[in-house]
Image (cartoon, rainbow, N blue to C red):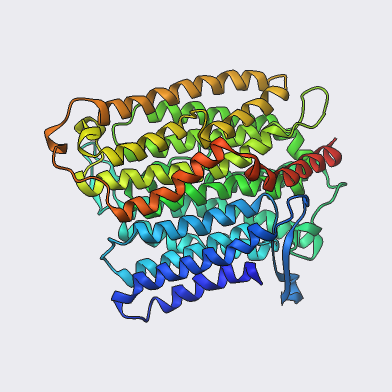
Length: 503
């Protein structure tokens, strides 16, 4: 029942928020997200880290005539993402406290979004999964389109603003969803059920495996986003309100890599082995492309958006390195590091977008070239920026380091062409350090800009949103063993199943 509560509490709160007095909406949303986070704690306490399979399983008949049932559960892959979802949702509600436009609609949609995101990570019935996947589009579209930046035309004639970014996000995701729907319906027609655990077929024709694998992969690649399906992301981030950017980078991007591991790897092991190097190629493309684009930005938020593309490339690279080339022996570290990096990226990038929002609320712009000397005028803010940005560039002792280190270790152990991938990824690390350090030097350590001389330092509400994330970044960086313990058994099982079925 615990997992159902994580769905029902925010869903019920979303409905109630439409009918309570406007001044009560924010406290209601805060209480709802706090209660949901508390309800998730038993999952961490009672989760058996020695078991690789699903736990807290709930099954109910829904539409049995068509093989559609309510089936939810978590394992070592999904549990960290569920916890990340409920944690960031609470932080985003606090970060949205200054929202004054259509308050009921904003917080109602945000709670609906939280319920849909949670559903994506816990659904085992593919019809239910698809319902949550599509349901997520609705609140995101309106949150970006209505509460994002107003429509405008830039000097170069390009259309910008929240409505444009929302439409772009919606169209990209919808195209991917339709491709995935084709694959889901084909598999349902073959098996008579939407329970994906019953969709495994070791004798399935390899050509069909590759076709279905590709349909799922494109749908999830758009969400990651993977080059060349990435162009919706910078616009969505730049135009969205701060809290929406946080949940977009912190949670929604992970749905792409989660979907590949959960469905592509489980359902199509032969195709997964065949396409592993392709996933690695796209991973290193993301790493280099994202870093080069980030290096060219002067808008702080757009820089962080492109850095997300790069960091998700490391996740993809780790996901691809699950066996040693030429020997077919298992390699666990890459997938383990990629999965851990999904969590790490969620917390680090959430911090970064919150910090960008802080400076935008004060300076009313995000132009790095117009900032300077912030370390003098905003010392506490500068400390949080240092923590988040050094974690993002992979400084040892912070969480960004351990995830990338495991990815590179696993990729190196995979041998063959993967060692070339490690060399390319290492170049990306150097470039990443370069643009992070440039931003810190230009905006915080450079000559004080008169525009920034009177900017107030970070306030208590903003500190409250950043402290939990900062503590997690330090904790996992210093002592990652507990986090790895939650995911290790599941990752080893996934790799073993791929190699057993696919070789």
